[in-house]
Image 1 (cartoon, helix red, strand yellow):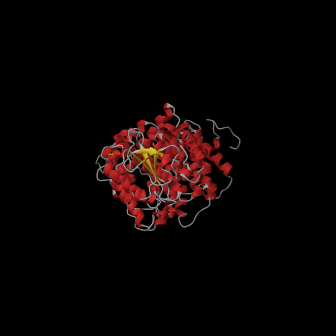
Image 2 (cartoon, one colour):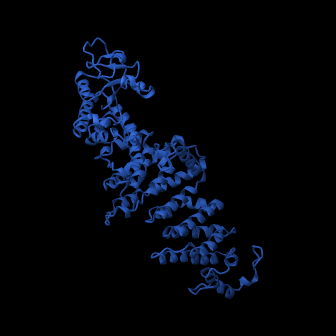
Image 3 (cartoon, helix red, strand yellow):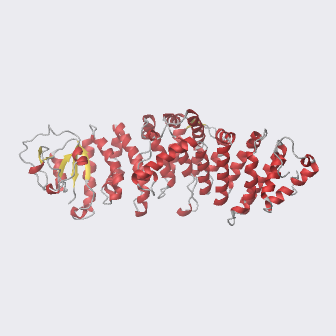
Amino acid sequence: ISGSPMSEERPALLDYPVVFNLLLPPSEEKGLLERAMRDFACLDSTVELALYCCWECSVNSSRLLDLCLNSLLELSASAMTGELEYEQFRPWFFVLMPLLSLQDSVQPKRLEYALIRLAKAASLLRFKPAITAATTQLVQLCSSVEFARTFLITNAQKWLGHWLFQPVECSRDAALQLAMSLISEAKATYDSVVQAMVNEKSRWELDWGGQLPPTTSRFAPLSFAAHAELKVLYATLLQLLPQALQHTSANDVRKVELLREYRLVQYFKMLFFCVRSEEEKALVGSLVLTPKSGKQMRAWDVLMNVFITNDAKRYEQDENKKEMVYFLYVVCIDYIPNLERFMSFPNWNPLEWFVSLSDVQLSYNLQAVAPYYSLVAEGCRHSVAFCNSILSHRNWDWAIIHMYLNSSSEYDFMADSLEPIYDAGLRSATMPQIRRFWLRRALEQLASRTPRLSEYATTRTILLTIREFDEEMLFFLDSRGIRTVTSYYQYKHCPPDSATGGVVAGAPTVGANGGAIPASTSGSSSSSNSSGSSSTAGFQPPMVVMAELT
């Protein structure tokens, strides 16, 4: 056999059933090939023998595939009490992959018979060396054999969900790697965007380099074929939402935070990866699911129930929730129908979302909280009623005091996400009363924590875009140490002048009666003008109160 070309004219030796049964017997008795693989003996020659046995023979191929796949599962089961070295798994992969790559007329049948079983077998492996090897072999197979790649895409419902929800994290990571690699064009555009965002901010430790998640406009357009394949995977993933809800609804009986399994992280990462156009955004809002229970449900309703149910567990640094926020952000932020669904979901207010501000949460909050508040801000710009429901919620005051007024510069990113929410409310006709309500209470609560507000001199500047002032409001702000008023544009684009106590040189300020006065007359003291000779007619909205708590 050695050195003979692979062709229809196989060596006569293998035409004798008795001899072939010695190599690969049909019974449970171990044949020569199995003994050689289990003993790591002459693997190169073993592969050569295996390929000759299976050339143009579906029966022999099935028998050898069963042997390899069943042996992998047996090894994985026996390794549950201690990690096995990859060397014990290697012989089976060493024979299996050349067999699946064997190009003959039986190859499609061989791949159809083995690929789904191989994916499921790989998903049940428990230790990283074996999982990594299996995934690498599958990726290489799909990159070299087009039939294998398209077969896994079109039959994703038979293996992807089973693998993505496995309890072992490295196994779920492997499923994500394989699924992304199936469409190389989509993966290349995704990786380029992620790398560019990380390089822009140089925050390697944070998702997206510490920026908001990328919207679909940042990704390069895909070819028609690649986009069609991506939509197949996306539709399959959406069909798994009821299964995701089951994992979320399960009780954590161990009550041990460190042992919790974030089973939905890779699932939502893959969902985010698939969203490249308005077609995917529309599908999550319109798709009707029919789970095993038989009761039809909209995909959007199941998605929101997954999100709310998971949030109700009040886990700190919840990676599941963070990935859900990224997905909600990308399907809602620039797609009004989904944004309206997000705002109008019954019996729920977005500010009921759980946030923890412990020191260990800082990195997590920069990644998860900022995009969530940015999504809420987009809703506030779109709907006055939604904006008022946010600003009147008790947790809005908490967000202002503990995040907006936080002295740490690390929270500037989240503060920038809170400002547009208030700005959107100030543009509505019903805003002034709400404005006074939350601002007064927020500052009073801040003042109650210390006898003197001067202790908060290091607190970041309060930036409040407002339309109008009245005497009562300005008196209250003045009594709380708010010293200067200037335009939003000047605040953002002109550096403050230390000689004027934080007032931009030449900028107008506002007196106690709402009149505009030159900045040069106000000096560094609180703004006031008893004459009231100036008018607000030339003072164009929006305005900014720069409150230095000194």
